[in-house]
Length: 149
Image 1 (cartoon, rainbow, N blue to C red):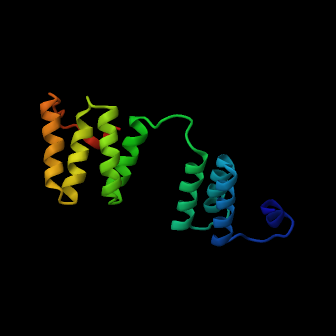
Image 2 (image 1 turned 45 degrees about the vertical axis):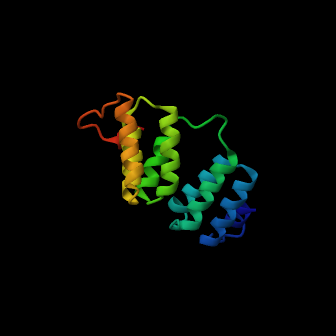
C-alpha cells in the first residue's frame, strides 16, 4: 500500500504515515524493511524523526528479538546509553548483569559505581568499588569505561 501511495497516487508521506508504517513493520517483525523505511523517511522524504519514530524502532528491534542472550558488548552499549540519557535505574540493573557476565573487567564496576553516584546512592557506589577491590581487580590507569564495552 505504501509503494502504491507513493508511486501511483503521488502522495508524500508525513510523520504520522511513518509511525503507522514502522508500527506495522514491528508487528510483522519486518526488521530490514522497517529500517529501510526509517532511512528513506529522512533521506528521501525529508521527514525529521521524532520520539515516536525512535520508539517504533525500539519496538521493531524488541519484537524481532535476539536469537541469543546479549553479551557484554551489547549490554555495555545499553549501559552507556542509560548513563547518557539519565536512565539510572535501568543502568544499575544492566551494570549488575555486566558484572555477572564479565567480573574481570574493571570498567563494569566503575560504571556501576558512577551510575549509583549520579543518583546519590553513595552506599551502592562505594559497594561496587569495594567489591572490585576485594576481587583484586584494578582499574587500568587512563582507561575510560565508555570504551570498555
